[in-house]
Length: 273
Image (cartoon, rainbow, N blue to C red; front, side, top):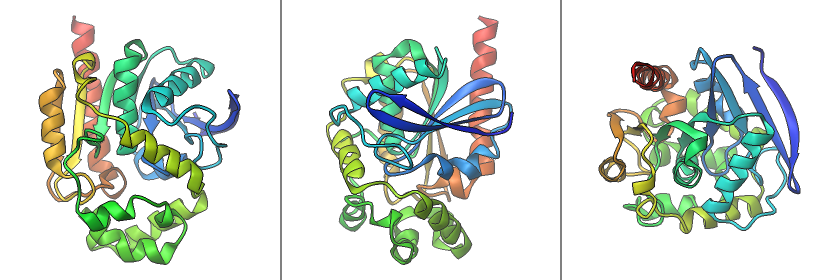
């Protein structure tokens, strides 16, 4: 199925949504400030799935959210949007900030999630922090508005292939600058992340879960994923040693192969039962 982009009015927000492909649905939850076009490198590798992507309110071409900035409210929004799109259940892939939202969705609305993929994500407010310089860069959406600034900080901030391939940085800048988030929308996402913690939710997340991490991720230290693996009772951990925080984008073929293998194996296991 060719990509189909539309705008859905939900609550008081106008939300940009895109679906493409056929097969079992896979809902993609983007990182902080990101928009659905940024999924392109990975989406091109995820064959045999109906991909469902959207701009979270306050990002991309979606208008600002009307709900208070907590992950609980964000998860309620996602569940409602899924229903509007005719999705009763779906596999869910959450990247970075989207991984926090995916955890909240799985704990709070367990029946809407089949399998869970958490990529380059952490434990929320109680996570092992990154360095001060990297943390400071995350407090503003400047890297979505200024291509020169993004190029200057990308190697040290994202790690992985972004340390040594300027062409990747240029391509990422082009995608990001096409639909930068509003400063207010970005701030609301920051607040939601700052009030979230995995620990009280972990016993409720019993879905088969893949934790995918980059071994060279300056933004989310891999110790966070090791802890996440320990506290989520039905999880497996895969670390790509030379990949960075943007592993879904700088290593899309490898990432997609791991993700699809996990989802297909989980599906086969469920079928055998």
